[in-house]
Length: 117
Image 1: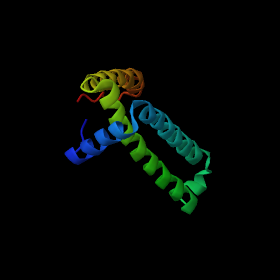
Image 2 (image 1 turned 180 degrees about the vertical axis):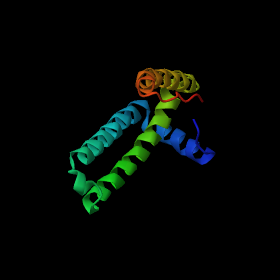
Image 3 (image 1 turned 120 degrees about the horizontal axis):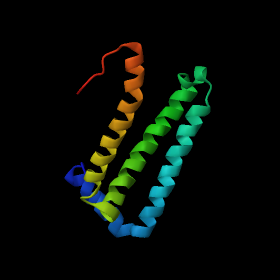
Image 4 (image 1 turned 60 degrees about the vertical axis):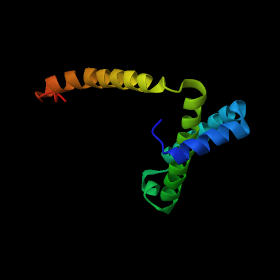
């Protein structure tokens, strides 16, 4: 978990105060709120996305991302402390492979060189 000591203390206090079940339920709720905010933005007509209404929805998305991140730090402590870093690396590697598999045929067809990192 990449958080400051103060964040860690508050996160541990939240788990100690509310308990595993309540915080797990809260994580589910916060994820749901983020999903709803993202869907609300996608439903906006393109011209409204950059207008005041769209900006308000974007602000809500940012708030929900913060809420979900805080809950994910708690879930990491409750269900997978120390294990998630390996899982994240594995999933990132898999995503990279999938992206390369999609890009390679397109790049070969267009004559573009494939970037290597």
